[in-house]
Length: 368
Picture 1 (cartoon, rainbow, N blue to C red):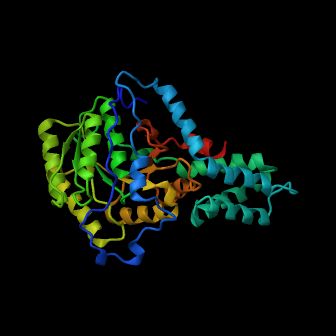
Picture 2: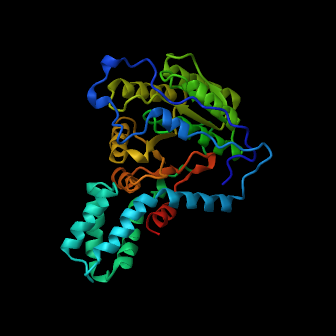
Picture 3: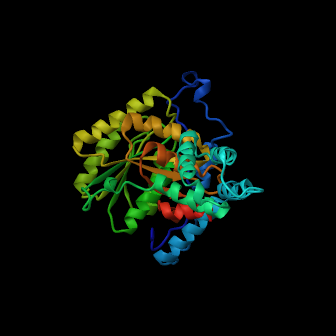
C-alpha cells in the first residue's frame, strides 16, 4: 500500500516531552512512568524518525510492500513467538495427551507473553474443549491459532460506511511517548497518498515543540496544519481546525491532543471539552476516536485503553512498537477484553511501517 510516490529528505523531529503545564508538585509517585515498562520520551520520538530517501525514489508495488511489512511484523514478534512456540514444544516432552498439569503450564506460558489473565483463561478453556483432538505440539499450535484469531477478529459492523462524511474528523488520543504524533503524521501521509486532502490540528498546546513536530509531518504529508501558541486553549485549536477544514473543503482532519498522564483528571476533562467543541461545530463529529498505544508497555497499555475508553468511548486503536517486544500478546488481550477494533499496527520507524491491522497475518507472524 503506497504512502508516498516520492519522499523528501529527512528533517530532525523534536522529541515528545511534557510541557510546563504540569508542575512537579502536581505529580504523585504513581504518576511517574516505570522505566522498566516504558521507553523514555526522547528515545521514543528518535525511534520514530522517518527514513531518509532520495527525491526520485519510489515505493515498490503494494503487494511487495505488504509482503515486506509482514516480514518486519514477523521479525518484530520473534521474542513473543519464541516464548510461545519453543515452550509449547517443551510442554509435550514425555507426554502425548493434554492433561490438567499441561494446561496449567500453558496458562503460565500465555501470561508470560502478556495475554493477560482473563484472555488466557478464555483461550485455555477453548483449548480444553478440544483437548481430545490434540496429540502433539503442532496440533496445539493449530488450535491456538484458531482460538486467537477468533478473539482478535474485527466486528465488521464497526467499519465506517462509504462514502465518508466530509470532513471526516479523527480525534487522536494517547499518553506521551507512545508515538502518537508520529502516528498522526504517518496516517496523514497515507491519506494523502490516496488523493485525500488532509488537515492536522495541533491541539496539544502543552507539550514543548509539539506543534513544531506536527508541522514537519504536515509538510512531509502535504497536509495543511492549524496551530496556536504554546499554552493556548486546546479546544480553540480544534474548533479552528474544523472551521478551516470546512472552508478549505478538506477530506480528513486529524486532531492531535495532549497526553501527559492518563491518570490525571484534568487531562480527561480537557479531552472531553475538545470532543464537545468539535461536536458543536460539526454535530456528527468526531467520526472516529483513535487511541495510540505502545506495545512495549504490556498490560499498562490495557489499563490506558480502559481509562480512555471509559471517559471518551474510543472507536479504534493503533498499536505501535511491536518490533522487538516480548509482549506481543497484549494485542490479543486488548482486542479480546475491550472489543475495540485494532485498526493499525506499527513495527518500526519508516513511514510504511504503520499498516492496517490484518488479524490473519498477525496470527501467522505470532506462531509461524
